[in-house]
Length: 169
Image (cartoon, rainbow, N blue to C red; front, side):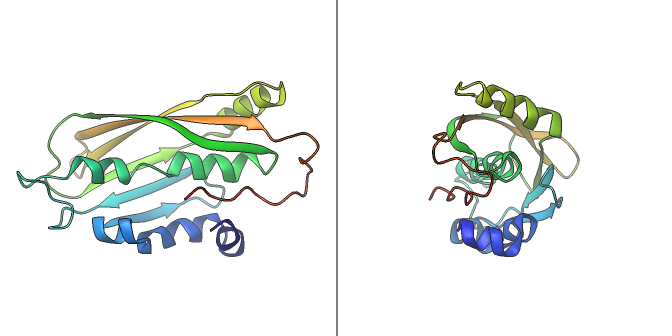
């Protein structure tokens, strides 16, 4: 996967995630990805494949639409000298999702540098990120909080031109 991301460039790779079987079935689409991956916008329409027993968005689909983005964005922006993994997630369902929902992921350069500094000091860093899933009227449907795990790679293996880490399955 990482080789494909390197070949296509991160924004095009993220757009291709719409064809990833779990996203294809759930109807998740990447609408926009900034070239530097500082911002990614994702959408999911309500379909029979992602509808729950009462006819609203299935909670697992709401979480799934948010799952990989902060990790992919940070991996791409922080560079190959760092290990970046998902550590934890928490979902708060605010109101039923009855139509198309969207989430906007933002990762400012200042935050990337803050995380990098912590890892450069030899610490493991556990940054937390929050994204709000909203309906088309702007009302919150769910809040997803992600905790990532970041550390400097083994110093002997870390070089400026080392290949990027593989995306986890």
